[in-house]
Image (cartoon, rainbow, N blue to C red; front, side, top):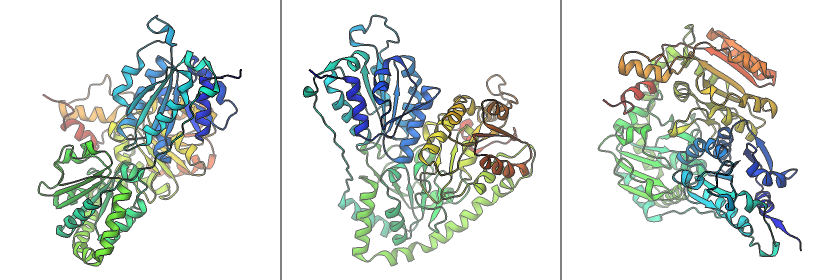
Length: 564
């Protein structure tokens, strides 16, 4: 009788789903799946650390809006993956983590790399699946992918013991299930309620976040914005969903970004939140005018009303809900009256936008040596095109400076660590971005502290021929922590905040890349030009001012980070 193993079923399920890449680091407990993926249409992309594999899978999923897939071995392979899983959980990113584990017959016998993986990961994922019968592997694969994508996206954990992978079964006993669920719920009554709120408002704003990007709502959001005249701010994965150059888009939603958002939030009387969470980014809702009414649209009911009472809760897909609103506004012939109504408000925000940016101009244009980090961020923003190039940010202060500066006209072209705030995402994210957009220029700007976590992913980029350019804002240590300590306790604790000068560019050259050292701001652009012209993996080591304090450092010192 012809038989098939659990590992063959797992591999075939991935092949049938046309998964392009599995991000992984090999190990004995997953070798059976490797064996049946070899020479298949599914490419195993091997990293130098499981954490990097998970971050790559997360970035791939963020950019492609399809599940990222990672595969790790048991025990330490599994534990090394946990930070990436937690990051995907906080960013609501669809991800399937497949892990091997000790065989069922050897549980609790002190076998190699045995540990209670299911219990450890359960709080971090949408669902934990452990397949204990080889003839059900395909079913469990289907459940994992359906769950990762359904409703609010997120990570799912699938564990398959090694003996289940190796056990042969009769193909006739295997139930083949392959279901793809696309659901875009909308509440038509709530659309009418929102339109009524808009008609009563004088100073409304829209904040669009990751849920709008996941729903592919860019076009309908732009139409809704233009037919109502309501100004829009974008956040996280929705950056660029409406072009920053659009006269009704006022760029990033986070208040530390120079521009109009702080003034808008203080004066607004209606905040329309589309697929983003009321989090630290908005001082847990306290940044908004206390008298403002709140409408929140989210596909996950439990998210609505976090930190702030919501006047109009809408459990809905953002795209579907905006489509309904757009149709109703057209039906009622409200567009011209709404646009006229909000024109003075938009004009006021344009003035506030210019005034909000003015204090940063001197730093964006600074000729100071060492380099002011905002000058570095501005040079990068000016050099990288707004439509096709990809910029990735990593590091505490460095991500803040880049987030304050980067402008975007297309979505899916900017990545950072989001609300989870995990350093180390930079190199894996950049590698994934280059893999996703092979014809685009990809640049990572990272701190000298954060680049150390997954430094060997430089070697991965070289080995896989992914010519990314990495700019290190080198302030000789952990700048955000150093400055927050100075603000809070009057001095920096040297152990733990100072690294000192490291020639990272020479380290990258030593493994086959190209390196540049920049100490004068006038040399930044020539280094960028030379790096991209080289066609190699490059490291530009920029010596930045060690004394410049970012808004995020101030927040870390004052907003709950240290308590008396």
